[in-house]
Length: 143
Image (cartoon, rainbow, N blue to C red; front, side, top):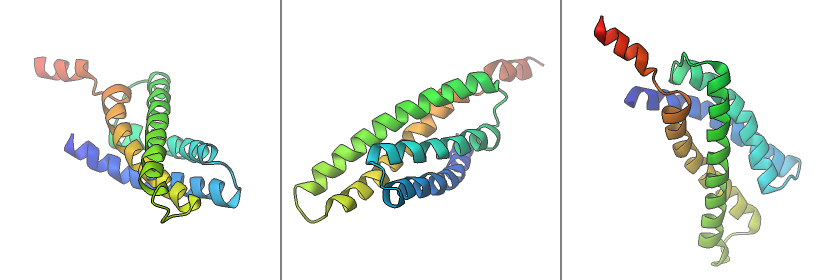
């Protein structure tokens, strides 16, 4: 698990750079809403994440069709949980004190949501999307 998490973090750095870049591009350059920006940025990052995690992180031999469907389920669940909780938490913490304007609060919400998303996504991918094929392990032990 330790090595897969290190590889996941490396992929996550690449994925985060790509995803956040697109999120902030959509949010600030194109003027899209928080939800649209995070959804589109996450979608771009998810494509990068799927292929890198499938081959590099988890070295999965599972079929693309099965793992892709599971990947989408994990990504969607992680997205809605992380960015909803992230937004509510940051608004609750910073909005009431009046120290930050709404743009800064939304930028913080994106960062908090991204951190939560990373943790939930790792466990979802490790357990549900790219589990180790236990039949191969059992076969190796019998030989």
